[in-house]
Length: 260
Image (cartoon, rainbow, N blue to C red; front, side, top):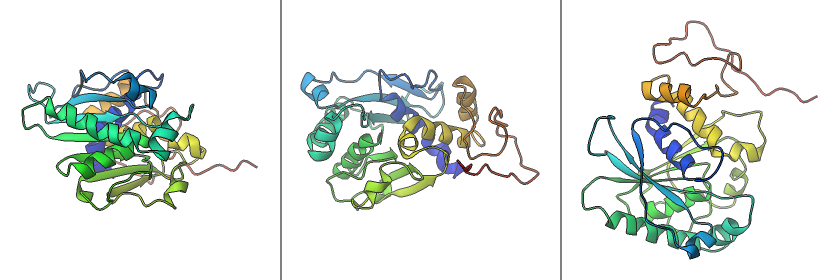
């Protein structure tokens, strides 16, 4: 799990930052991610709930050339019905996402690989792009099962991270999830289904796990004041022990508390 978290946490950060304007964004995204200018989003696309951000990812902060470009799709806004109508009941957002990716990719003439990421409905949009463009890798977080493409296409290029018991897993029983490497985490066992669906706690958890093996993740834990996951042993204000930590005694993890 740690290896997977080290690989994926930058994409969880990018997916979080796609919710531009929200009050739950990261104040520090680290030295290996750089947000870059994207194409304007048309008023018609915005009316249909579509949004995204663009990033470059670097192997080392001093590198001049990025190792990847990341297109991060914004996910579902549960405060309104726009995303549900245009993203779930209809295919408008799916068609817009594919067109947008192709337009962004056409802007660059180099061979830097593309990665698409997203949370909730944004995960479904990333899935669709990865199906249409098999050379593109996709990372999805608490992803929506509502997508229209062939689920086995490009399956080796997709990775999904879901919080156990989160809201959309109920719907996943009725719509097949896209084929992908799947990781199910139990970071917030005491939260309700809707709270578990939120991206920021899942992204925080991935960063915390990665920080046991990755110094950059450790710096992000400190810079963003990320608290330990509910399930990890220790007091609520536990400081992350860092990459040099070796557990010498058994760690008793926190279990769900009874409400009675």
